[in-house]
Image (cartoon, rainbow, N blue to C red; front, side, top):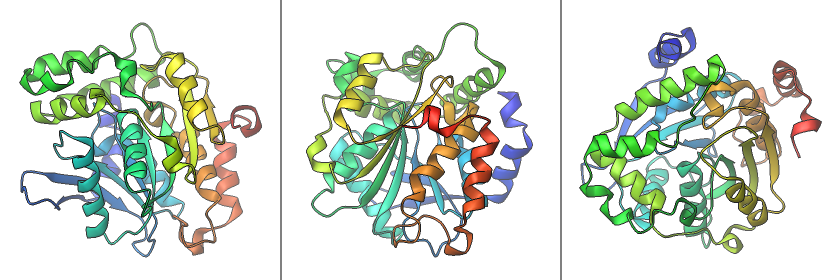
Length: 310
């Protein structure tokens, strides 16, 4: 925990990017917390959805890197929503409040599932231009918890945290992955009972993605080859659901590659967003839209894109 929390990058992020709190529902207790960085002239930014254990801070390395390259980036934290349709309605109101017609969504685990459901929910009047799904899933039944989904609200916070921690990597991992896990444990501790119970409810209530409703949305799937909370079957199901999706594979990274393998993840985000450069759906400032930014990022990973990006 200390390694990331005391790192210069994290301290720079906390000191330079203000945390905003926005209420869009009639219920004043439903507060969206978000970091909005980069040129405000961009009307189709990339928005980051965290996993069950995450807060808006977990994508600080993406915020710093992408805004440095000229992108507008929003990293957010959800209010307490107990129903998927309620979540989708709340997020639509947030986009209206921010005056954003269409957006690119990056979702990690639960965040990826919510991103898909929002794209599905708004398919008749599309609000999602593209999706990046990191260690995500398309059907909640894979967790075998649908029968307990309606009882999470009754459980005390310590029990909910124990459920979430049970999905974290066990055994020896490299130092960067260990730091990422410690940081996510710290973020988990910052969430209250309602936050956790509502997220686990959304994560486990019986629901699945209807791919025919979002077949026109450009998709990139990022996943890892080492241990993560997702089974191989869940990953294969995602590939079947999006046969035309680009695939970005990381040899290692565990559950939180955006923290411990941020250079590679940031490269894949750039590659995904590059297809929209020069259009009204570009997430980057036209003044920064130049090839040397992309190639500089590619070289920094030390891996060949052709080998691991399909």
